[in-house]
Image (cartoon, rainbow, N blue to C red):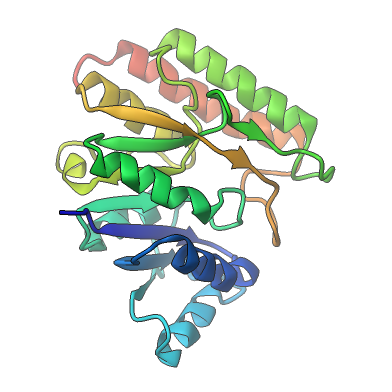
Length: 246
């Protein structure tokens, strides 16, 4: 029997992207079990766009959770996992940097008995597409991300390549044992390392990262922004080195 996939979309100020993204997910998947938009009360009213889509009646698989307090990326993803009714959950950025066309590939690997399938920029065939030169897609950001991942590989587990991916499909039952921890992207380092240490079957799938289609970056637009985020990743990595209980 095929697994049912719940796609979780954590959003904050993605009003320009959310409708075309949901349409792209609908087009990519042969059958859409559910898409859960978890919105942190976006000032640009992303949640209102989703409400209108639900009211239209053309998206019976679409659900909305509007969070009025206790905001944050990791908390939004976790809330989506709690709400999910599928056997498998997946999540991705909502700016088109991660194409929905990879979702069927990731899901097919779960159906082939992997526990976790991750979209990876750093395995053979994966890459950054950086021809669009703007403050949100700088060479510095690409270089720092590569260096950060190399550092994490050396410190933790070299078998895994993209510790800052955030593009994943996984069996929901895993989250009975593993809770997401962290504030922003560092949650993924923590999650993947514990998955590996608990001997779940993990596979990385190459994908091409692209610059965001519309809106403003949540990661930052300067070298100082990247360094500020990167520091949290280093702290998380250091903590995991000293951790014995997973």
